[in-house]
Amino acid sequence: MDQSTPTTGQPAADETVDAPTSDRVLGAPLVELKHVNKHFGALHVLQDIDLTIHKGEVLVVIGPSGSGKSTLCRAINRLETIDDGSIAVDGKTLPEEGKALAQLRAEVGMVFQSFNLFAHKTVLDNVTLGPRKVRGMNKKDAEELARSLLDRVGVGNQAGKMPAQLSGGQQQRVAIARALAMQPKVMLFDEPTSALDPEMVNEVLDAMVALAEEGMTMIVVTHEMGFARKAAHRVVFMADGQIVEEAPPEEFFTAPKSDRARDFLSKILTH
Amino acid sequence: MNDYLSGLGALLEQYDVLGAFWTNIQLTFWGALFALVIGTMLALMRISPIASLRWAGATYVNVFRNTPLTIIMTFLVLAVWTQLQVSLAADFNSNFFRLAVIGLAVYHAAFVCESIRSGVNTVPLGQAEAARAIGLSFLPAAQLVILPQAFRGAIAPLGNTLIALLKNSTVAAAASVSWETASTMKTMLEFNADYRWEIFALFAIGYVILVIPIGLLTTWLSQRLAVKR
Ligand SMILES: Nc1ncnc2c1ncn2[C@@H]1O[C@H](COP(=O)(O)OP(=O)(O)OP(=O)(O)O)[C@@H](O)[C@H]1O
Ligand SMILES: [Mg+2]
Image (cartoon, rainbow over all chains, first blue to last red; front, side):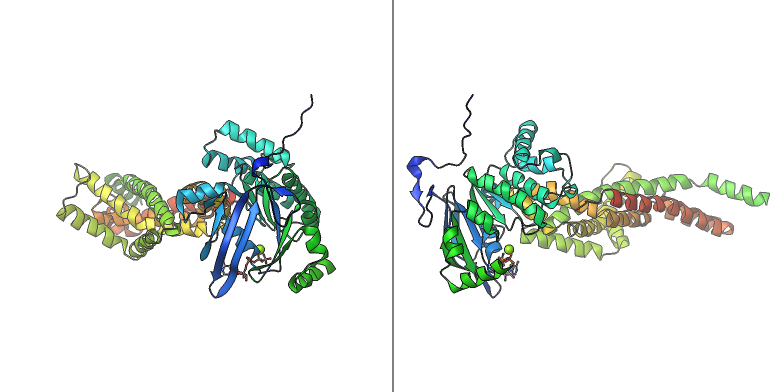
């Protein structure tokens, strides 16, 4: 029997628009940041950020330390408040607090640099917690879903272990499965491989590339150029809280326009 | 020598020392149970995102932690019961006992709250962020992710609070629970001054026997249940 695997999240033909900086056909706007400003005390960490991520788009955010990449990610998930401007996910502006915000967060998957798996729960329970307690899924269905996701990221045989018994790469893949279990509309990754030993970086990146190929909308803060080249539609370069430059990955890495980007790339390339 | 031993034997027959200890154990049990419930709610208030709840929790802790237990007990008996006529049970003794449990609970709840809060501090911030990121709001995140880890990190200070509570249960004397250990010892000393050292040793050793296992148990538990990160 011929089973063509359907790619999830592939935009329907009638709602596609051309993303200006991408050569690929992408869906309607999914995450929209308009005039977003954020201060930490006197420090202006996000300066009038305008950014739209389309359905099915993979966006890589790159930039020097302290440029506001994490803050940007965290603001999209409302782990960080913003001073003014607006952030909308799938047309809905992020609410201030409470139930509505929790609902919206459930639709935005987040993968942290330090994995943040629930340390007192098994791998399986880490993945089933959200579906059961937020989505109200019954135990059996949640475990079925969790096992299939754990298999998908290649850690299905670790389901009964505690997070501390896993390697960093395995933990991060569990974290990806945990986020996917909420069936999010968009996934945020904040330097998902920078806390890993070098030999574990690829297993996590492979899982992310597979996810991108299935059509998941992704915002990825990373300095992994291989990943950006392979999976990203667009690279956004941030410095000092501003978006300095954005371009398709090839163009950005081979011919950066701004001095800041050139300078930054020369630093990460010489290492 | 024989006189000495039979005198001591008569003393133990005359006074229900075991019953007195049993009273303190019961006071401790109920006091600890309610203190745990109140203390957990206070800890939730103190870590909640709502400023007024945080303020109320902090105020409670500062008031009760800094008020002597004897003052609280005396107030309960002389103001709440005698004057406000708030009665918790039909017979006198049960009523005094319940007032004493309330006094012990509201006082030690402040310490339980701070123990749990110290446990919360052992839980990395990323745990709460991950919980919020999958769509859990404050209470479910606290119940499912933060508190289970916080309690495991708080076993040692909670054990110390329990030990303090057991010893402080003798302050129930101030709430007219006259059949507990300290009151019983006082009566025994008054009428049997010849045996003063023996009587003191009896009660002191009794408490040592009760307290040491609690300490051993909490040390063992806190190691066994420690969250591996
Ligand atoms: N909670 C906070 N309080 C105060 N300042 C903060 C806080 N979080 C971040 N900052 C500051 O805001 C700026 C932007 O931080 P952010 O973490 O977004 O940078 P980043 O681009 O992710 O850097 P890195 O590559 O090091 O992760 C930095 O100067 C940082 O020191
Ligand atoms: Mg960062």
